[in-house]
Length: 480
Image (cartoon, rainbow, N blue to C red; front, top):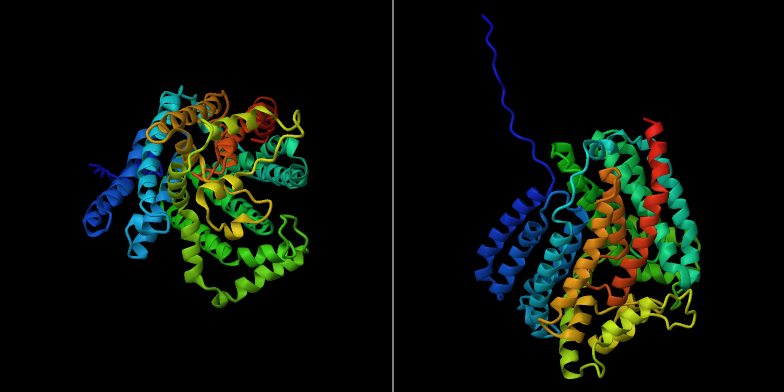
């Protein structure tokens, strides 16, 4: 007699929206317990519930992973301010901008709910892809994609000076340069789904970190965001190696961000010859040497100060609160001034209107925040009060929620376009991720840059998907 013993294994756990929703539900429970002990119990409770609410609203079949990042990053900009208040032993309204920061928090939470609903409306019922489209990325050869990434990276590097030199074509040039993120996402999707080519992923991360630190801004972080979004899009099953890899990725991202915060002021001085311009005048050796010295002697860095600076840089909601106070005491003399200026700027492409004034968000920032802008406000650098504040300036609350909904529907429709194209599922996600990364997700984005950064890059990327991607897909197919 043969005895057969059945071994039942537990269902695998996937890194997906359902897992995030469950994790954020636990987070909400923890905040529920902490709320009565805090100075702002209602704010703490709302802050704890919001990530779960946002993920629940957008947790629909085939919703793009970038939507979660887009919403949660803005939530983080508000939550960080609450964390700082707790560290300082204050309530949310005890900071330099007073109780208006408290109002800004609630207005921001309402805006995030509106944006999530808009995304759900646009992408809640996406048509189901075919089985071949869902699995096509598994047949892409990682080595070929790595060479494509190097070519796209070289193109992006070559186009950088052109974008900086010509404001008339800067946005379309930047959109073309961002194609390297499309290829990067496709490479990560192929590797994460098959387990082949891990060394290539490590090589891409190293290349992006090194090149990111050679510029004036924190370009190194994007590769980590793309990697995590690729894992979320593919619903990667969580094994010990994946979990450890995710932990290492997040810790490395935070560590590099902390290091950059600590050294960026001195580094930018060395890079620009301590001038007020954004032109790099020092040699690569000088810049690399300065960074190497800092990395070799970490004991010379004030890590506590760097952590505080990083958190305060993230807590962008302070500026929203400042704008609330100023706009109510000294309102705009013209109706809908912020939207009018933004629409006028977008409607006049510089290639047709070469005399168009340069977009200067910093002037608006100084008017409504009236604060020192420090190193972020270098000559030639634009710093904005953000589109939430601009909508409040024009419409107040709750009127601001109407244009916020319009913006959400606008962005959601562009995402829906890519997610309904008859191409590989991973390619759809790659183009969507690239489009939103062009926007520099966060509440600090100005109205004009949101509109311009959505419309023109969408057109460029849509043309690339239609006319360039098919040739790439055929080439990848021939190599399988």
